[in-house]
Length: 282
Image 1: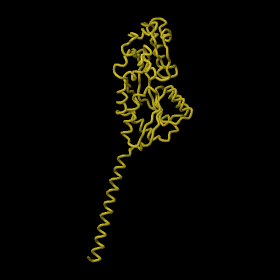
Image 2: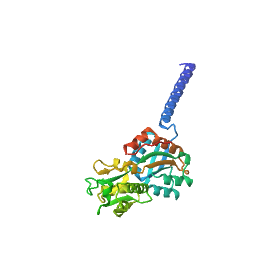
Image 3: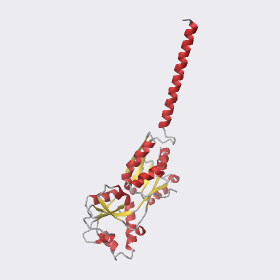
Image 4: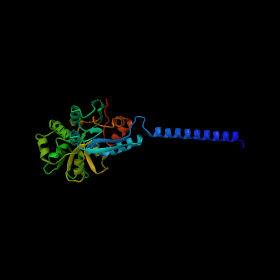
């Protein structure tokens, strides 16, 4: 073989190798691009979350992580007043998911939230739940005052407790409600809980005859484990849920994407499956 032919063969081989390398690099670049969210969402997101969202939070987190590979959502679940206090005491969080506009407004006023990121994302009504079989024979809210009936209720600081008291005030003003009804209800309360799921637990275990909780909690329980007594809408209190990004968050881009997901049709569908109600997000 001549030197010229040999050099030509080497040059052709080098060209083939370079072309192959560029092709592989291009494919790799496409794969990496496909695996990276166009929104830039990545890394861990710490979400301080109202306890009444306990059931739905797992599905929301899993769906978000599946949609945006490379992200991880960690929920810190407790009563809204508790997570609000933790944030004010310096706890780190990226997103605040609140069951109380009162506590959201408090954080906004204190500079803890990026105010223009705060959005309404769902709502909830108060209902009365009783254990399966209804051992206390509670057929209506008026039965809650019978001697011996045991009731569980949220404390006056937790959002479900705040709204329960609003409902009691409205019901007591109804012409169909006996005089002294509200005071008699409080006389039958045997436990005040700092988080809404704790009320559900007390009722589920049969430790009380009835409890005031959110409609979503009843919807999320195993079929047949609880029974429901509704409260007429005109006497109810609609709980508005909000979320927003914390001022000190170091992952605001992912936080923004998370909020967009919660407000999306897919996010709202997951919430609806757990008994939450969609509301205007404007």
